[in-house]
Length: 480
Image (cartoon, rainbow, N blue to C red):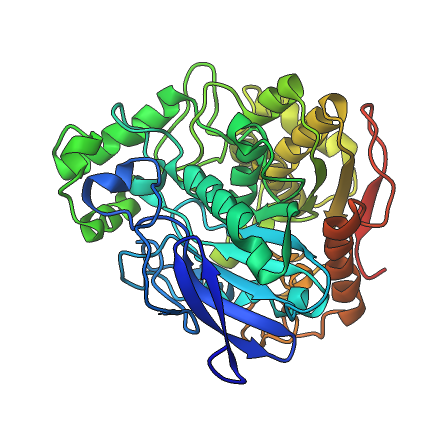
């Protein structure tokens, strides 16, 4: 202890100094692995060399190299994406919010941010862990490699290096969290969007055994991995942009800024092959790379991990309404959207129209896109876990609709996050072109959802019935 407002903890890499607040202690920018520089940007993460002097961890640190991104069309997304690229090599770090260290050991929750595998960080305002510490949980948010260093498929480098970073963070947490009052045997890994896809990949990864007790997948997909052939299309495009044969060796001397600068030129790549659609429909050119989808692996491998999994009612609206292309949707748009995911798009559209006979064309377009991106892959992952795992499976659908963008945004992708983190008071979320819109969101719903996530971490149950292999209960998270 250095003062009444600071506290010191000794980790396996060296001593760190955090700050106290009314709900516990906070440590920011704590390294869990060595800085990825030069050639090591394309290797598996390695242990940090450590330090002997007390390291100040009271201020936020650098973030992974990434392009500027704080909006989708007219929608302000800065609370989600955070401050963008804050330069500095030592960015493989975690932020930690812990209750007062006195008392019993606490459950641990580790959050993996989204951002299309190319953007975002643990510095985003949405991911403040104060509410979790207030309610008796150690909350940790993780930075990981993004874009080309994190996920480009290379012949002389391991795939999914960003996911390997998260696994390295979990190992560091397992070895150190007791010093922060956390229980290393009761760790819940959770993530949203790209972060949720990474969580699903980790569940299917044998190396995660013993590190995770429970998992939460928010608006992810168990079927979003690229095949090596699809990933190779991205690799070839990187080579064309840089005018090199892209390997870890040739990329070693390319500055991070140059790797970031070419990312916009990779947008919209056609990754369709004769046997596979682009699983993320062009919203990003990066994902996990695998011969087999995580849901398929999980169905075969099984798991003893409890899983809470779900998606939002209007996932697809985030990629349509802010761009001004939703309100004027016509039948041709339905066919174009369905063609992203279905080899027989006309049949798919007719199926959706039959299942939703009162839906408008705009509503059907939102549904088809959201289902293709996240809904179908979520259901596939839930079914795989329920059929093969010894752990319990809990399903939800988030349904509260924001009136943002003239009421078009609804229960879009990302909308559940302020409720999970109990952050409805964040001012940058409120307004006609901001996530929560211009009406007051229901505080009681945030309390309910946040408490369910905490309860799941504590006990393995969010407070509603689990799913059985043939289907079962899906909890509707709404204010009605």
